[in-house]
Amino acid sequence: MASIPFTFSDLQTSSSGLRSSPTLLCTPLMGSTVDQMLIDMRKAKEIGADIIEIRLDCLREFNPQQDLGVLIKQSPLPTVVTYRPIREGGQYEGDENRRQDALRLAMQLGANYVDVEFEVAQDFNSSIQGKKPDNFKVIVSSHNFHNTPSAEAIGNLVARIQGTGADIAKIATTALDITDCARIFQITVHSEIPTIGIVMGERGLISRILSPKFGGYLTYGAIEAGAISAPGQPTAKDLLELYNFRLIRPDTKVYGIIGKPVGHSKSPLLFNAAFKSVGLNAVYLHFLVDDVEKFFNTYSAVDFASGCSCTIPHKEAALKCMDEIDPIAKKIGAINNIVRRPDGSLTAFNTDYIGAITAIEDGLRELNGATPATLSPLAGKLFVVLGAGGAGKSLAYGAAQKGARVVVANRTFARAKELAEKVGGKALTLEEVQEFHPEEGMVLANTTSVGMKPKINETPLAKHALKHYCLVFDAIYTPKDTRLLKEARETGAVIVYGTEMLIRQGFEQYKNFTGLPAPEELFRQLMEKHA
Ligand code: ATR
Image (cartoon, rainbow, N blue to C red; front, side, top):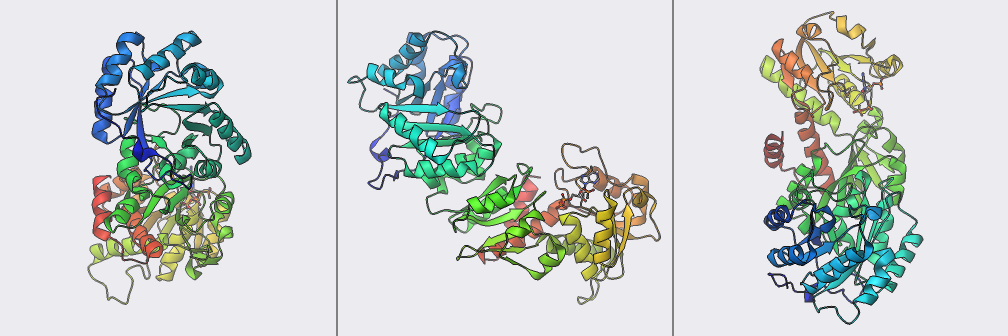
């Protein structure tokens, strides 16, 4: 028996078929020695996992009689014992009978679960028939490292797994697109037996975090970032602290940031903390989206994609999915904030524009002293925007609206020209802007991705050109202190961080999502702490 009693009564399925108990958090132990696993199991408990998975195939040396007893009896948490063969993504390549003998021994020594692969499940389950201890369950697992089949095919697979005598079905597929997760959600929620539904890979992350929303039996959270047992696995700490995993329920509203790449975004950190601080039943995720139209067509329920932030490269493409667009956002031609109305329709805004422009205005006020409240300190300024994408348009329209004279410089000159014409400004190439200084005291706003992590040594404008600017803003916030901002500071300009735009546009997004005032102080503290 495991040293800590484990009540199974609260793990039963409800009469509707959906489990009434919370989804468990399982931390796989991937240590190569028994001693390492003993250390890691205590760590897993400290982090807040509910169960540990002992991955026997990771052990460099393994003596079943001796080691299983130690691992199971010393575990402070209930145990899943898994001995994964290479063909299913594990490391074991020895004799099959020996492998299954070890799993049977684990059962006898008090493991709470063993995980056996679908192909051998029938035989394995027959071999233990009538010998299963009360508190023991068999997880029958299937791994697909290529794709996520149709909902019908997955449903059939779950039925066949059930047919082997499984207590719990585990389906792990591979996400080629974030919408693949929808099929796993559908199966998990409708499955007759408790089901673990996981879509592996970066595009499958939401399937792991949202297990509790769809009644998944458990989800896996790694002990640390480098110790994942399958592609795309988050850490247990991120599940618990970043995504508020314990607060996710079937009726939790799902928000998120749509982008590609998107993993670097700090928005989930801010919004999840904000939701928690006021007790909102909502979670905010990273949505790694390739095709924004497919995303909104697939996730069309009122409580899914209830609100989305939108970042590179989708700020323009998302426009065509909207039912209604705020007039300023329409003019800019780019959106970064999408709200789903109770009737399911989508309304879009551009809060980048407000966030960036107010931050730059405050920076100029700091430099010039107070200007009359009615007059923007941008009025009459020469305002150079680098980039002509979504963020570039926001800055250019925003500055023009405040009375600035706008210059747009872009790698693709045609895009610069088009935007400049729309805002009544001038267009330059990125080469021309290096020598452009018709006057001193200009304002510079970088909206290109030049200088963003990992290429932090790049900069969009040479240092010698920066001396003509009194204020430099960089929309990039990873890293916070870009090379451009460092060099601008050295030349004496006031600098405005991308984090400031992120924070302020976030205030606006939060207001649009929730109808509540933004927790400004909390957002600022978190940005400071996680800079
Ligand atoms: P966003 O919505 O954040 O503005 P975007 O629409 O993809 O993102 O725009 C990215 C901007 O960065 C564009 O102006 C792009 O220039 P092009 O119009 O020529 O594509 C610019 N950009 C991206 N990578 C760049 C690079 N390596 N050098 C110069 N400009 C770059």
